[in-house]
Length: 372
Ligand code: G6P
Image (cartoon, rainbow, N blue to C red; front, side, top):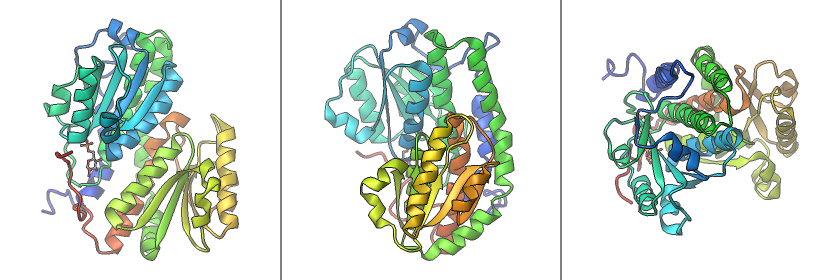
């Protein structure tokens, strides 16, 4: 009913709007007075975490994209190898695991069969399993050694939005926790990142208040035959997530690429007028990366692409390469997906609505897939 949707036309729009609160709730009470990250239910000691020499992240769909972002953060902060793999592939590939492997299973529902089978396989090999989950008491956290719940609240729309952003927050917290327990980061360094995380709900509110241009663009793109997404570093999983949202909701062909890889094949897809969504890293932080993406934008533009550029506010130089410029508030590089994903969620929702699709219940999809 309309009341359940809190005045929004779709659950998805309501859930997109709830993201600042969902992030704040997921951060709440996670940092102890001693500057340590608190997990909900931990059957893992600090010594267990110090013994970890490798991290494997397993998940499906949108949660897998959160895992891809986590890899960048964990390797950067913790300095141990981290791999991320689709749960359905991990399970049957014969991955090399032992008791010093930490497997992180990410799942909104906690009931996804592919992810559950991956975690059971990990446990059989004696690996420790930590779950990131949005559903209290569901199967995946019950079968794991530790769990960090995302406090996103119930997610009704099939396409995941607020669960994704809270999964990112949980991944950051786990990365920081590991770094701290293992002595790679000091408490004050951890607290400094947590402070940046705590600032993201406000930045997100600002961003959400100026999405009219994105909605208009969505209506305009409803007849496009394909939309390409490019990004680098943490912008790469954001590009994949933007494309997935569009496929799920708009039933349109869409594909995400690592910006630097495009020239090795897929750039031949670009025709006159092909919309290409470009996720640009912050010019502060690692500026080199931002410049590389800008040259990738020039490459597609030279081939006729209509460029939709997501960049940080204040990055004025990028404007000349953008047919449409969508700006997001500043965040440190690793945290940027908390901002850059949001316009892509709204874009997909708007295109789907303009095409007359059922935004909350897309055809052929289920909120939680409990078969392998
Ligand atoms: C289904 C949903 C996706 C979701 C995936 C993983 O396919 O349609 O939106 O990302 O499952 O779900 P989970 O509950 O494990 O996060």
